[in-house]
Length: 303
Image 1 (cartoon, rainbow, N blue to C red):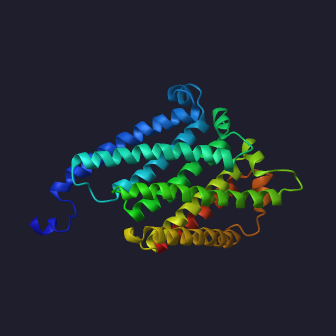
Image 2: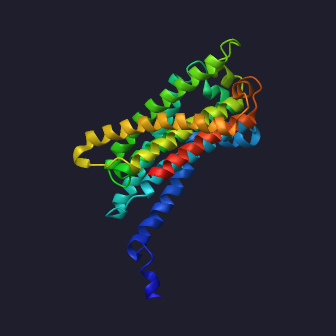
Image 3: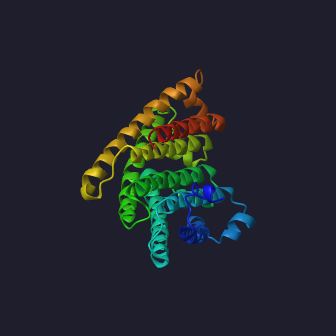
């Protein structure tokens, strides 16, 4: 038995901290999900989910829950604190900051990325396309923020700086990703007078799946940056500059590679017509899956 114990990384001293972290993270996950759910729907969750059966609200809430869990992973993945009080204080700080980030990213997404429509009102009315892009936005933001957290060391107070930097970077990159998809879609459907915003507002779930899949794929690809760039707390500005620069490169590389994979997988299919006009959810889901898969490949190669 003593010989087997040398293969376990857990010690009796650290086990209590891990159990404390687990209890706190699960509690915060439940509390923050209910809080964000109320913010998203502006109604009591019981009324929205069980009485009104608003599936769109359920999808948006699910995205919020997964996004919060992704960010909290950055805290759980680091070393334990020196004392129980320090550990609790750190986790509470990250949880509060996580809620603020989710609220901000939803506001910025609707204000700048989807400026022509109201995502909030769309979800309240049961617009599934609006819910999908809202969930995708929160998840893609969380992926990039977590990447910076784990790179800086999310289990320390330096990690809070990483969260703030990661949030700013995520919003800039995801805004560029939105501009790219907006330009591509509007150019392809210029003769029909269709726009990306208009199609989301009218409930085009195929387009929403492709759009969200692309942004999540970008978030995953940028996660790979943390495995390539060295973090130096004494040269923080240079380290962050290198991280952002390589992150932008991975963003472009993921887009180019995904285009090539799409040509191979969906060869012979007019994806613009299928998604933009026929609203073929199967094609939209496949395109979204391609973007996510390529992002995962980047992550697997470099992290």
